[in-house]
Amino acid sequence: MSRTPGPRRGALGLLAATQLLMIMDTAIVNVALPSVGEDLRAGSEGLSWVANAYLITFGGLLLLGGRAADLFGHRRMYTGGLALLAAASAAGGLAQSTGALTAARAAQGVGAAFAGAAAFALLLVLFPDGPARHKALGAFAAMGGLGGVLGTVLGGVLTDLLGWRSTFWLNVAVAAVLGLLALRLPDGGTRGAGAGFDPLGALTATAGLGLLAYALVGRSPLAGAAGLALLAAFAAVQRRVARPLVPPAVLARPALRRANALSALAQMALFPMFFLVSLYLQNVLDRSPLAGGLGLLPLSLVVVATAPLTGRLIVRLGLGRTTTLGFGLLLAGMVWLALSLSADGTYATTVLAPSLVLGAALPLVMVTTNAAATAGAAPEETGLASGLINTSQQFGSVLGLAVLVAVATTRTGTSTPQAETAGHQAALLVGAAFAAAAVLLSLRSGPPAPAPAPPRRGRVGDPR
Image: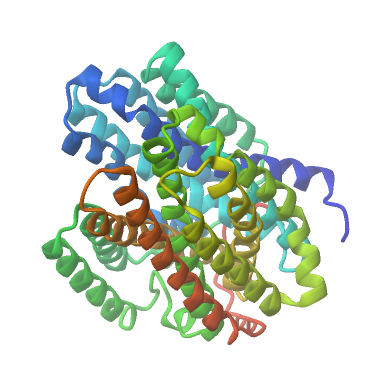
């Protein structure tokens, strides 16, 4: 594998740091929520919306953010998203009520959606399909794995030493630094909004995805029905407008649909696993929040060590076989973890060993599904490909968490350690079922078909 040139290596470091910030932010706030509730006198319902407001706007706007990056410029949308994220974080740090903090979290989600989708699109443009892109995707996967644990640790330390508001001011500082460094990224020409923007498609897609996210985190069937109706309207709009937000021909590619489904299944298993393991370590094994976060550190270290090797595995085994290997490890790790949990166990006898298997699985499934979902994207579709794959991952995370937490709650019944352990085991086995479905689907994976060359209508936001 060729070495990454200096300028591209610097750009990769910047973009990977953005991924770290996005994942770290969610983990930090989750750790700080009990202190927020005590300071602002908020109950559990109010605190849940402090967390969920971010998930709803982030999930609802990823697709629009990616397409907007194609139309208005990748660097422009990236820096604009970071600026909004920093401003919203400052508002969160100054919030004096739960309502104000929830509004700030919603605005954070908007900024994160535009910055995150544009960052991934920039990566796709800077690193063409092949070993270089696989290496870059490995860096993203490594930062994602590290961000969850780093966020948990930093959240505990900052909240204990400086108070929960310091977690928001950390976001301000990091986003400001990334935004200033991003000004050195080159940015090419873009198409104007009038040449290719689909306002009706943007409205129906954003509202539909936002309502669907609201339905999942708030368990609202009415919102879910409204969201699905709007997404059906979006699909109808896309077949009728001259320049759709998501061209139907793109969604007609079997490899792209399969890769996005696999990516969603991966997150349906992985994202709730982190949450459930943290609860198990704290509620059953009686570890502190900080110690619970450190319990996931070995997993993150394996992610960081495995991610750079993923590209070599793809070269040696092929994309399809590496995908199946990753999901096979995910299935084995989930089953092992579920069967190892015990009400009277220890960290070393229950969580440690299976978490190392899951740490090896995470970069394999993330890199291969991202590579398959973006391999056929034409240059002017990089933001769209970014928005699609990120939306699949986000909704997979939210749906998986909703399903597995519901399973754990139903199975638990009482709050004894034995009952909680049984609930966690049942939920993890459902997550293993998602991984098993992904293994079967991955066996059908083949090399993605190249995207047809579109007619030239002017240049797109190209940072090269």
